[in-house]
Image (cartoon, rainbow over all chains, first blue to last red; front, side):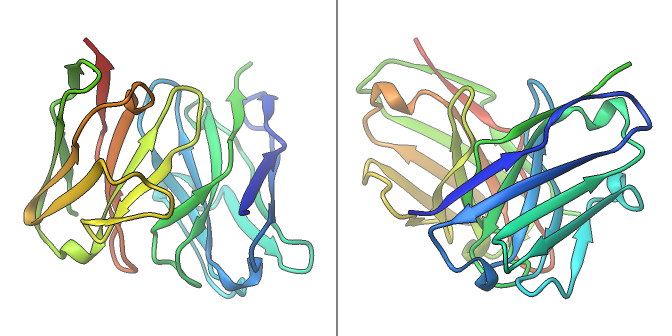
Length: 121
Length: 108
């Protein structure tokens, strides 16, 4: 069965960096686009970034452009999110989610359980 | 930019009752690209419906989706205890995507 397991969350000071990982199993990882979606405490869902199946393209929400980098290692079935210059408003649960398609179709058919990132001094 | 507005914000119902959730788009969208997700407290969202009316794998048939143009509906025919959750609609596709703000279905 499809499994997505995030890790790497924690408490970090403003301006610092953090890298999230998402280990995928149960499907052919290299056939699917992958996303990061976040949810601030008590708020709704916000898409953050997408990477195409082969890593050829990435897109970001405006609020993280230039600070966050999404990447993937298809040999390790793992998705990453490098988060630099973190701000208080980045505090959220970060979910990795599989795209229904190979690129950026933005239909999220499977989700991980999420990892909490708290940005606080 | 297309905005999805869900109503009501909160729906208070009893188990066994019918739930009708609305999602309205600020401009006409293709029904091929409208999805619904369920999120229970402390859990990740789960895909329920895509293409406005197609149930995702493993979703019970008490969940149904309908609509076109600017108005879409998620119906839960008879609420089970596990159905009390927050529901999000979402527009998807390669050129535009967005989530609604969510409707909470709570036990009355």
